[in-house]
Image 1: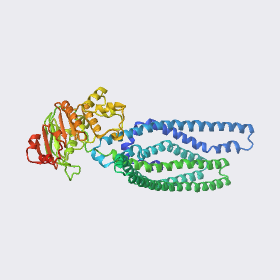
Image 2: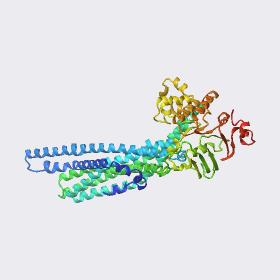
Image 3: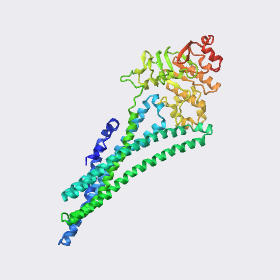
Length: 594
């Protein structure tokens, strides 16, 4: 019976790299569970053949005194109860507790590792995989299929294998022919299992790939609920959802029907084998080679043997889904970030440091560079603005500075240090970023603000909010800082979300600031108040502005005009406004708004 374990041995590429280390971590729990469940399975085998002893030692014994017959029956019954209640039920329950504890720890570790790894991957990866697809990896069928297989393999498979082995060993002692017939039956069953596994694995792989794709599309529909209502798309979106759900329905039907066909084949085999066993037992009994006790034990044990054989078969079918899931999870875990942390990172960056872009070339598609051989130096404490047409590469420049991407060639340096030599977390803490469309988490205002500084006190939070002109609307809310903002900040206006983002940046007190259209959603009065607050709080820290408003760029030390990934002009506002060129055209064409 070594065939099952060999046939279901997991693939090294996914199992050994990502699951085996976790199983080793909790090996004593698993070894204990397997041992106890194995003993429980052995008890089941002995329990199934109890009719042999009942017939041979109690019922079918001529001239046995009635008192002795009852005495034997009492001892046999006590042995049966001990076997079933202690060895079988108690051992199995303790084993189940051990395994369940280890299983949940393994699931937690896999989810945590997957989440950490995905969070550390670059934006290229997240651009290729939807959040719905990644969510399904963590809480959907892939991880569930893996753990379902291991639960079955640990809690049912050892006992089933032990039950089959002990049953065959007992029959071998009683009658070689009957034992050989049972062994042949088991081997035929295992062969059918191996044959069916390949088809079921293919079906599971196709289903999981489809499920991940549909989950991503449905998640996108749910995230776009505001746009759906703005454009009155409820009917179209509902129809699209129903069509996606119908795809899942058809594939689920196909998967389950094919799997059920394989189950029918296996069950039909048990009926044929039982009929053959009845004929063989009758022949051996009439020939005087076995007694009625062995006949009763054989028939009872075979009915009990169908369960462990089905358990073994289920292990094959479950491994089909588990191996497909491991392949999908392994692909993500084996994906390397294009912006990996260095092996020996620089411990910290100086607070006041020169920022240099040295012959930087970068494109989201390497064949179409967004920035081409860009050279740029920003002095410590300097305030600079980047202006230019949409798609010129302004935001890309700041994404390279934050190392959300790495350039194809050239280098970005801060204080003479290539930022690829700095840990991503240290680098990004060096900057306070206010994006054009800030993300707001579905939690309280306090938690949203503490994203920038988890240990911030309420007093520090209030000061930052006052500086960003955000405290007035926060204080007016019924819950104040404890008010929840809804998914994506739906309870706040665009201007309020942007003021929260500015408060976050001020709360972090970074060495440098990046403002990517930071005041684009504000009215003129709010913008002036924030500009005054920034003027007071920036101090001598470096600040980079991406802006389309004249009020933002007028007070910068230098303005860089970018076109098609190159700096075509640089200077102060007065210098550029008086000089013919793209900046003057932007101002006159009102692409830089007053």
